[in-house]
Length: 120
Image (cartoon, rainbow, N blue to C red; front, top):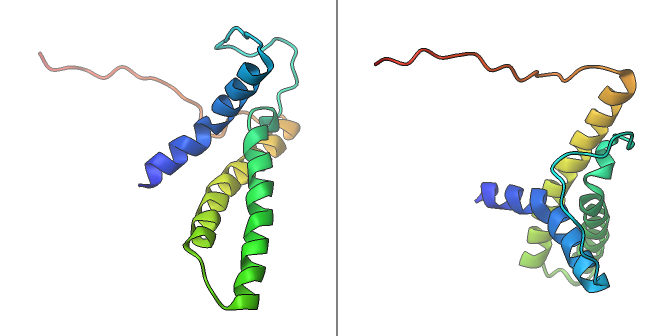
């Protein structure tokens, strides 16, 4: 299902950062808010996804070359393209958000809660 792929792609950065901290033996406190004064680029939040997109793009090119040389398609290549597309959506959205932040624009869809009457 596409929802599972999207959720796995979105949480990928958290799991990669956690794995890196475990391998280095660091205990890092988790914070739900950002640091004050930190640079606010969307790519600060999706750096692991960006690296994985580049890796998938490279392996997709290699898989495509193999397919053209041998004439044998692979289901792994199809799955690679699907994953690369999911990561690519994150990259495109990050570019759009970065451009919007540079222009100083507000959020395109502000979140506003309005009360809804409930029938008793």
